Length: 309
Image (cartoon, rainbow, N blue to C red; front, side, top):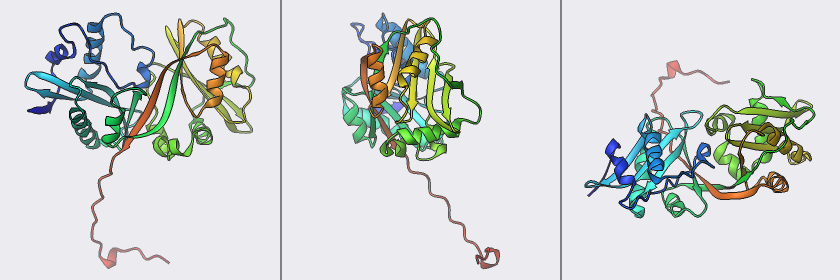
């Protein structure tokens, strides 16, 4: 009989078979992209364990003493948006994964979740299973890998740091660049867009280009041994190559640089290719909207009603 429960430290053994094989984590959150390769399978298994054993919301499917699957979810920027952080199928059984999805969705819904996001590799065997669990594929992305270049910062006239009051302007830029099908899931409203922002795994730097009070371009950077950046610009902005040069100059100390680009951002894809970046993986973004609990109807007497003219 298969059942679900909270994980135990001994479950780590079930993630590694007798030949040292580690069951892969099919979920690909943004802050893990480009960091998945590890020299030893046990190290990967231990990292997976500690990623969900400390305060995360995790469900394990077991049959007797055998672990058959595991799912872990975490909040994004706000409690209304969650994402799947770990998804391990150790049984190659769709029913097991569907059961894990169901228990996870029910669990995060009780914690205030309105949407759950999931990123998978485009060739993941669990894409169809996620769809069967009610997840909707709304976007495709490619991860590009390249090298930083230049010791001096490339000059882009007007490029400035993000201020406290720029967030609404960035959201308006997002509305101008993302297709309606993507906005309907990620950012139908300013509140939903804020809640759905992904963790980058470190302190990011945001740079903006503005013209006549309107934000035309947004560049986000995360320096480190593995540098990362993303660029969002108006369709009419012709100097995206200058923005990429500025990003690479500011990440000059990074050994390698990654950028995750949605397929609808063709200008960024072309510019990355011109700068020598190569595809390092294709991904699909899926999401599931959760039903909101119905508000209780309270009877009101006529004497308390407010007249409307």
